[in-house]
Image (cartoon, rainbow, N blue to C red):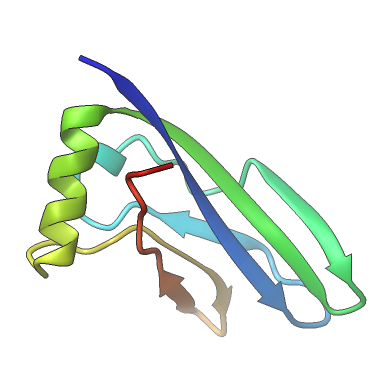
Length: 97
């Protein structure tokens, strides 16, 4: 059983820069996804890039990507808490990387 690394990337444009959170969606492969980014790099005055890297087994990753693309499960997402609501974008995963 091979392992793959999946990298989730979120670009945040806002001042002050908010705290970025990652959510696993409801896919088994991403249950171990923690909520805090691994790294946040400032890329401009009002912009930063947050990244999260997880390692999953290849079979689970392929199955999860297929389920996400078919609309049967939610993709992992990232965003920030703003006035008690989660605002963010779903991630489309590329299994070729």
